[in-house]
Length: 195
Image (cartoon, rainbow, N blue to C red):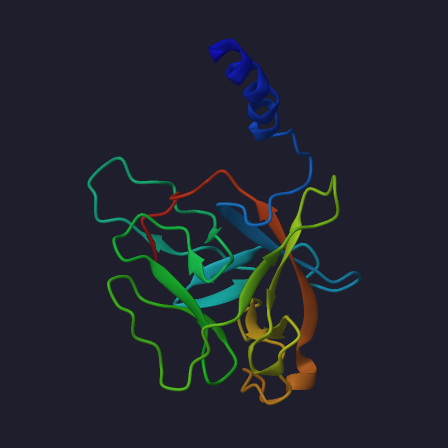
């Protein structure tokens, strides 16, 4: 009798085993971002966190209070669906869009954002099967993703793609819309905190 019960359950147990899947993950644990806009100065520039803002060009700015054993902190890595940075610091660092339209991140140990800020929706979308990357998107306030706006120091500041954004040059037509390519990363917690 016991053998009969076990033999009837074996096919069910086999069906419960995970199948191999070659499609990109729906939400990787962490990912980096680079801009895609052909024949432009921002094509393939990485997204960098610095000064509580995001930039194409320039360098990532990070901080670690430990005397040794700090993570490298030289690459900007986003967590989950892209609403936060992948950091070690307790409390994490949230990503938001400021009332100006600028893509920003919170200071470590603080959840403060300016009144009227938008917290999303941010989304990681997987690419086609076999693709090495997905897409990072923001659709709050009716935005269609992101745009990069020129600054005086050869970096491009990242904004939500909004026609009423307050951009460095004062003219939103100076900005370039781009696809934010999201490259899955195994570098979770590679920065103590972004600065």
